[in-house]
Image 1 (tube, rainbow over the protein chains, first blue to last red):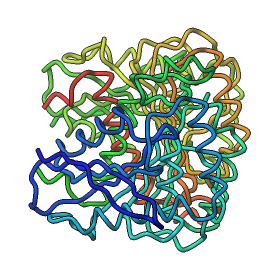
Image 2 (cartoon, rainbow over the protein chains, first blue to last red):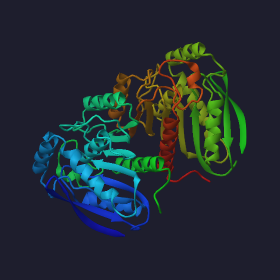
Image 3 (cartoon, rainbow over the protein chains, first blue to last red):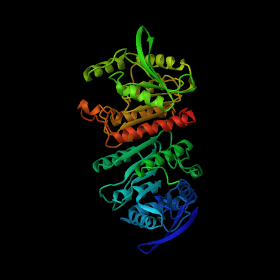
Image 4 (tube, rainbow over the protein chains, first blue to last red):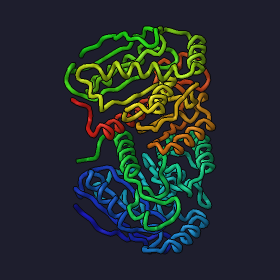
Amino acid sequence: MEIRTISYECDGTTLTGYYADRTPGRPKPAILVAHEAFGMNDHIRARTRRLAELGYAAFALDMYGAEGFSLSEAVSRHVELMAAPGLMLARASAALDVLTALPGVDRDRTAAIGFCQGGITALELARGGAPIRCAVGFHPGLMRPAGSLDRPIQAKILMMIGDQDPDVPPEDRVTFAAEMQSKQADWQLHLFGEVGHAYTNPDADRLNRPGYGYSPSADRRSWLMMLALFEEVFEAPAAG
Amino acid sequence: MEIRTISYECDGTTLTGYYADRTPGRPKPAILVAHEAFGMNDHIRARTRRLAELGYAAFALDMYGAEGFSLSEAVSRHVELMAAPGLMLARASAALDVLTALPGVDRDRTAAIGFCQGGITALELARGGAPIRCAVGFHPGLMRPAGSLDRPIQAKILMMIGDQDPDVPPEDRVTFAAEMQSKQADWQLHLFGEVGHAYTNPDADRLNRPGYGYSPSADRRSWLMMLALFEEVFEAPAAG
């Protein structure tokens, strides 16, 4: 397994992503992984390695050029990012460019996945018309950042939400469905009952925040749904 | 493959289900299949055989003791059934009893699935406290029939709906979520964008009814989601 950090520039900011590839140089589909508002962390690095173990090239992008935020700092960073026109898409696109230029990456078979804020990131790539085959969100936000584009969506969309997620109220789901419908996207929205925000993150309970919590069943089910969509859009299981 | 009809009684009415089992007598999980308002038909028989090919014992129940209805007759039968207190649950329970008494059926590992009205049937078993491991609905109705019970739900619930399904308006989804939430059920609700009612039924387009239509992608995806839940609740793939 090759595991390394890769630094890259976006509009003068240095960002440092995390790359994992079990069979370097051999052709395979590639997955871009977008982190939560907390920035890159062990949860995201572990997911990235897990994808690599399944045979994908996996690259966790860096949205901030920094990491290790407290909850309050994560919230203020998130608010700034959402208010900066086009910034999220620009940084995600820069990371996708890095990924697709790597040896062995099949640039015609890519996907973006994201957790929490990272779900918005994956959606922004789709809304920006990126040639990814699917965009998958785990407890994603469904609000749109400033400057969000309305290009034709090429990616198949799968968003998976805890029904009790306080950060994704029902009205956001309605707005999202109407947007996807108006764009004639191939979209799916999955609700896990009795589940809150950050259900994939084993550290979520430690935040001690109402409506946040880890759910082993939603974690497992959502991961399998993602893999099923990968098999569909890549027309094969992972590349051994 | 053993394929046969099985007749049984429920409160004086003779019902005739359809049973399929690839390896008769060998122990295996068993699936009860509930038909649409049209009654038993080739779509349901084909699904039942498909489950048997995967290694499950599969039994398509008969809700009416008759079949081959026109659309208008199906609608009036459906309305009558929904208004008859407890009738749907009684007939579904009778069929489940038939299934679990068959040789080779592991009575501790059963599930109920249903299409359209059959989704309601599967839910009624769950609401009635039936010891099924899961209840799966394909474009299910979410309204409750007369006399619907509120026993503790043992089954894991998975309902998969076309977002454009005219028979399952958003308010029904909200009511359903609130009911499941109040019962602390393990529940999931999946929405397929750009998809209408009867998406699993290749004959749906011929009904020429607004909002009804076959969707190959939703058909395929929903079937895979059901199989993933079977693997989860039965703790194994089908019994070879």
